[in-house]
Image 1 (tube, rainbow over the protein chains, first blue to last red):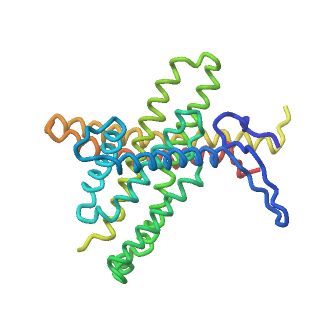
Image 2 (cartoon, each protein chain N blue to C red):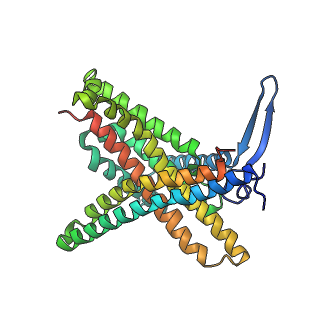
Image 3 (cartoon, one colour):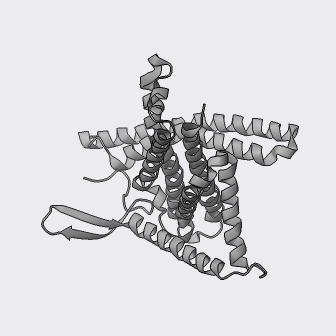
Length: 237
Length: 84
């Protein structure tokens, strides 16, 4: 059937290659999200390996170079962010939050480099949301045991609402990230279709707002809310 | 002019997507209120500017969620087309 809008417009997920797996009736599609996510992951891994090798060679008396200063700035900033929210539990979660933040921010900024951002695919963000959901409840059960479940029925008539509230956490987290990045991607696609080959100055401002500002804010908010939810469950009362 | 049932459904989906984006009004008002109070707080206590800004941005991002639900509904109506 004919589609409402041209579905090969530049902001939709495009299938690049199709594998027909013999034996089972399933077609695996390699689409733009897979490729973009692979590029982002390889970039992060390569940078991490370079940083690891460089930092291990450093003497305490050396003057730090540009790369080392940047890495130290990022790690220190994220460490302070986790410290400010979680306090004495910070050392347990700083690795996860740092990895999450760097992955989300690199994915969001991938739109600047001509890739379709991986976080503009609901499959990616819902996975991140479910990881947070499982981690929140795992930490809650580990810290409080059975009390973790009895705390949900605190005012007894409100038990169903509390349970719905727990399941709304991954949904709202993933939809917030997806919606922001997707709306940026849709707007940029429409603007590039509108201005055509005269895409000189106008898209730059929109890239600045929709990709840089919105992407950084959403990465910050995702990590912040993850920390707040975890902290809420493991706090002693 | 003859309109088939299929075309009617498509037209109604487009109208529905437009109506769903009315949800953008709420977050606009909410974020504006948050930004206004943030500005007032910075004016009262300029030393706490960074704390106020981060709290304001977090609150605004949470307030934005309902608008994004509307956006998700609009995108689904336009591109996924559940009512074929």
